[in-house]
Length: 236
Ligand SMILES: Nc1ncnc2c1ncn2[C@@H]1O[C@H](COP(=O)(O)OP(=O)(O)OP(=O)(O)O)[C@@H](O)[C@H]1O
Ligand SMILES: [Mg+2]
Image 1 (cartoon, helix red, strand yellow):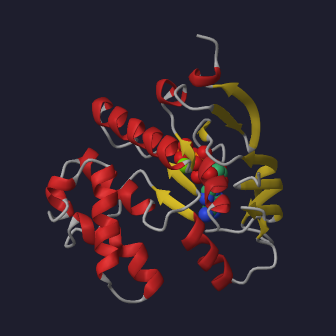
Image 2 (cartoon, helix red, strand yellow):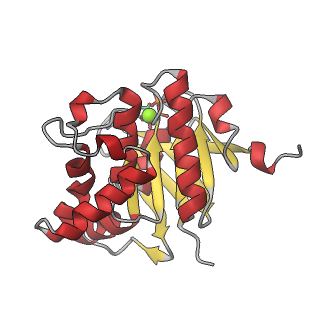
């Protein structure tokens, strides 16, 4: 089976060509198989978000290779990257970035609208289905602002799934939530991972949550240093 993600010797420098040029990723190799649920941990400033942005095709590495579902991204133009990103990758951030004037369902429809250019009835059906999956059917026609932080983050997860991505990248998705809501959001991602075989890569500072993943990757000073087995692959 083709890996969902393959990184080869990824290096990233900021401020290239200036006196303050700094390399923050120093040759990262990583593969994620279909259906994996992986935590990315590491100290502040170690390069986790930089790496996620490169994997998510939001930023290009200074050198090294990124392949998504076996497709090399090296030769792609900006519009080629945008199209590939839109159809294969979903994003969840620490802050949900929902549009407050829109309902939950309208927010979930946004990626589909952007992709198709106009609204169709099918989009609403897909959004309602996803909101049912994240247990928000009762709230689907409510404005996003009228919902709790945990509910808003579940809408954001439904939105990330709207284009049926093979990979969901989540950068501290529970960072703004109390521990009960964080638990619920993490469980939800795990359930979706099991039900749909969607691959997840989740940045978290919470070791307890990370231990529920298949693997824990540690980013230390721009390198992946350790690969601990998560709870599910550890002996009982
Ligand atoms: N746009 C940028 N320009 C210059 N330097 C940057 C830029 N973005 C990040 N950096 C630097 O790159 C390094 C890695 O930052 P990054 O945001 O990837 O860390 P992180 O592991 O996500 O940290 P945190 O846990 O605090 O979110 C840091 O030293 C940071 O200052
Ligand atoms: Mg970060």
